[in-house]
Image (cartoon, rainbow, N blue to C red):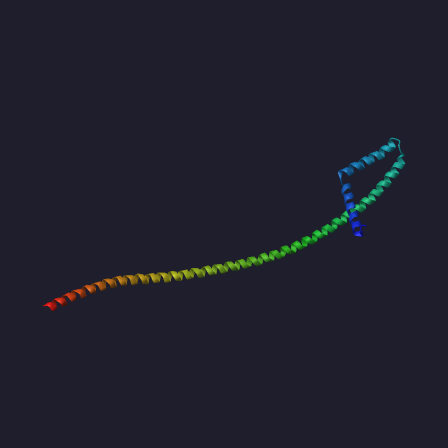
Length: 176
C-alpha cells in the first residue's frame, strides 16, 4: 500500500507529465486531428451538427478545467522553486558580502605586512651599512697595522744592522 505522501507524489508526477505533454507538438497535432474529425463527422452525415457541438463543447470544457488545474499546480510548483532559489540567492549574497569583508581585512593585513617588510628591509640596510662601516674601519686599521708592522720590521732590521755594526766595532775595539 502506498502512503498518502507517495500517492500525492505520484499524482504530482502524473500532472507534470500531462502538463508537459499538453505543451508539446504531438498534443497540438492530436488536438488538431480531433477538431478536424469532429467537424467532418457532421459534414459526412455521421452525426448531427448539434450533437457534435454538444459533445465537443462538453469535452473541451472538461479538458479546459483539468488543464487549468494542472497548469495552476505547475505554476505553484514553479513558484515554490523560485522562492527556494530566491532564498539561495539571498544566502549567496550574504556569503559574498562576508567574503568581501574578509578580502578587505586580508588586504589591510597585506598592507601592514608590506609596511613591516619595508621597515625590516630598511633595518637590514642600516645594519649592512653599519657593518660596511665597521668593515671599512677594520680594513683601514689592518692596512695601517700592516704598514706599521712592515715599517717596524724595516726599522727593526735597520736597528739590528746598526747593532751588528756596533757589535763589530766593539769587537774591534776589544782587539785593539
